[in-house]
Length: 374
Image 1 (cartoon, rainbow, N blue to C red):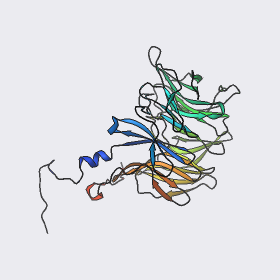
Image 2: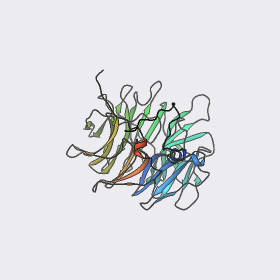
Image 3: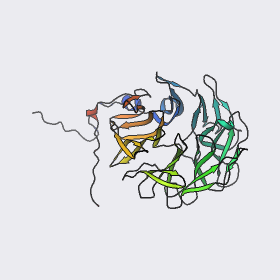
Image 4: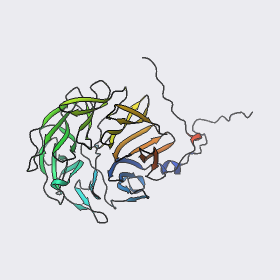
């Protein structure tokens, strides 16, 4: 039996090289689906940290936004939610000037907002009215910037204010038939994970919002990720039980969908985060943090059943779903975070964002989740 070699701390030889570390340095974030095409943002150290919108049609990945465009927003300073896609057209915020840009397939980006001290984030397309609905942060005045919901013409022009009067807003989400808008708001001194409000308003014939109704939330209830099912039911995550769990708003009543001692929400440091998506009218792919790791479930909202989907990862986020397919970011202690496509029917997964280089599992100390009474 060989004796172990004893060396001073810091002098140990490692099979992990600087090249291995750099190969996994690309930051993956904000996944979007346009039909079955999948888009995401890559933050690339090799390009000075430039954030690039990337597209996969299932046959390899390709860059969408060209240099020097940097798909990033600084709304709330932390940013997030910097792009959206609608019928092959990408709309994104450019960090260089804070403006919104429109990019048709194969064409160059074109600005659609004025060049001034306004920033934009959390974009959703309203094709029925040929506009984007998004968060606007206005730095043109004195003191703290003003946060509002605005509508931006797809062809460019002055944004039209839709909602104001609160310190912060996020998550504008349009119903599938385009008749209603849901969003979140909160006020100082709260952060959104302390407490925030979910609002719902009809959209008038002239595109303005009707008087909003308060759905749920308050100073002591945190709401996360309002979203609409394909058949037009409003869903959201609430921590009303002490755990962030999934609920549905139907006929003026809050209905719990999946009660579990797990966190299905995230602190809203950035815009555009998601932990669930609809693979069908009554089927939801969702991820929750439970006993030290993120896990994936498939919910049947008609029967109330919840099926765990085993995956070799401990970190799952940015879920988007469409017609039996879920895409999300996923990683583990031995694999960098990548974009993964899951065929729900076949239970087959595919990595879309390429291989950032693998490190031998034996070279990595794997964490072990433990629980104990306190």
